[in-house]
Length: 553
Image (tube, one colour):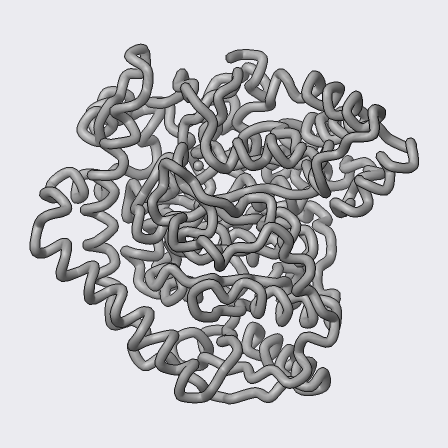
């Protein structure tokens, strides 16, 4: 979760030997982050070789397969080589927990289908990386980044994995994350987990990836894949996307089934696309929608979901749109970020949008304590339910077990920060507790009807915008993430409404995103606006694996 308050900010932002990239120990993996390694970062960046699939889109890959230039197998092989050259070598980005030992066999199967004249859709043969809190019933593990679940093999696919396989996507591997989706400690460092250590931002290796979908963001930004999937409770898709010049979609809660995802809280959790273009995000979003028999929330999406969101993409989509600017609380903390917003507003006006400025959310910041209370209650209940379904050989079957495991393995699991949030959650009662019900009602009312809905109705808006966040912070394993880092994710996250971030520009080489937010089920409108803005600005540029930010004027 991301917000301007330190407790909620740190809470989320905001995860078989053959499947593991390298067989190094935790200490050896962390050695990449030692100070002497920093002295070699510039050299590592210089060693990054040219890569033919760098920045390739879904359409590019489909064209290459249709023409016969590449098979799906050849594409998988190239991405595996890219990962091998960057994840533990060169810049040592450290974003992969496991690779799928069956990826090449799956590619062969899909190539056979293509040769027979059958394709399953736009994702046929497309490799994808998914966050390591999403179940796959194969030879990979699902660990949420924790050593406690390092041997956990899911008994059935998550809804997300089912949908991806049906669409012909190749699940290439699992990406790292802020452990337990960053709901462990008030002093956590985003992008760190017990299984692989700390990930690095490909735009500036000493900067953070943000979290909790840190590995999905870094992997996609560095062209380990064309598309990736993260999960968000509050900021965990949108913040790492903004930090790495990606398009990230946090959809309406209920649009994508959550079964088989290691949870934080059912009132806010959702998976979402992380891609380099709005079109690719729209394609991936459409592949993931549907009714999940194991997730009652998806029943509300019936008649509101689409299997193809690309039909809403319109280069002229800004024309006639009414867009409100949220200044209070979410701007004014970074003059350079505000300057990018000013330029973005000029672009929107030039392309026919009416800008309502300001269009502040009156309730912003007034329900964060209620949100955190809800998440503590739901985390205990939801994680206990998930862990009760894991196999007997896994050493944890409840939140209490996880807390005890971490205590027993503190040198590996808690070398930098503890588990205060988990301990707070463990003290909470059941979801029948009046305190929980009151907090949930307050958070939903103030974020939705009295928040986003109210300001949009008042000004007759199609969307609200604000900078997703400013330039990302330096990674600091001593002190953890900085308090007070402002991220515009809370209102949509708490309300369960959609939020799309799109690259807006750079501050001294560090990516900054622009967020589009709307009411429930407004993904078509937000995609239209985001696509038009993207096409008008073309703000994304590929990472150069610099040792630090562009500090010279």
